[in-house]
Length: 526
Image (tube, rainbow, N blue to C red; front, top):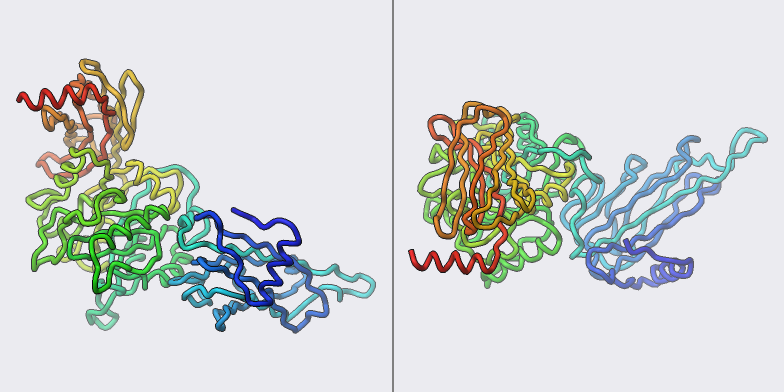
């Protein structure tokens, strides 16, 4: 963080606040300005008010405020309220000391809304002060307070997690979640207490995620971020599930989830074009959000307007493709078929795009019976992340450290790596192999004994070549000989009837220019 230095800087800041002047914005996108203000509470403050003033500069999108004092042990009480240049933004008494104020979400007790430029005030009320006044002959020292204010710019990278400080869990693990769900803030519905069909409140989706033992869930209502403020309130209660805010952009040329960022749906305007969709994607990339193309293999017709993806906005800032969608799974009774997003994604891989495969339930009713709506978390995405935080989940998806569990189980695992003379590569990584060299696909599984493993190799000359083997032990190693024209390798797991159970992401083969020219030459002669 860029921190102010010297008392002169602080004096200038306070002087500018008194004059109502804005401080300059952060000089580097992504680096918030941090203000640290401290002071003393004395007996004279008992049952009085004081204000801490600070300036919010142009370009500020979010405020974070942390307040502390050292008088709790002697029952000194400090109540807090917050005012922007135009008026009241909330009050929390002494029950909250860490506050977030953003355009669309805020800590409960406070009002979200546009961050006003100019002088803000933190009002401290002192119902009881025990500084100075103590037992006879035993005066207490003054109470000291500390305020930390962070001013985030509109292009700042996303926080580690949107609605909680830091990670929910700090350990590296496989984390299971759902990247696609809907609530009352778009077309999610469920039965009310009296049995009426009503817009379904967000907490019902989170209760369903809890029942499914999910580690994370993205709530992705259509073309809005109105649900973000309610999700911030719910995160404190659902502290076992990482809640990821998202928006499903439903354009005429397809649907896409944009996760993490809190911007308004700027592509909805009378003269909207594909360039506006691309701008949303680019802004998400700038802020380290996540962009996922949803159910791209579906047709776009009166059954589902705009459901198929036309490629508008390009692929440069797209991170992932939803290869298994709960709605499609229910409709076609299979993760495959004529409108399979799985085949759509593999064609993109063949073109050289490195897009991560994920899954989403696309739940619109978290309490519906399975014959009408697949449950939240089925199918589910399993991510190997360094910790359970939004940033770590997004990083892992971008890196391809992901597999899809079609049935949405809590225990099945599959992991893939390639072992070659040049080294090892995990899902999402690259490895080099030379023509005629030997390498091995190593697949580790859990709770998949008796199922069928299918390893798929995409070769620019031979096309896609598959190797099948029954899973008779947790680890399977398949030795292979390199043609030098391989593009990627991945694995599926199927049951004995052929039904798809698991989908891994690929390991990619580094392209040697001379070898690729040779491969293209061979392809032309076929």
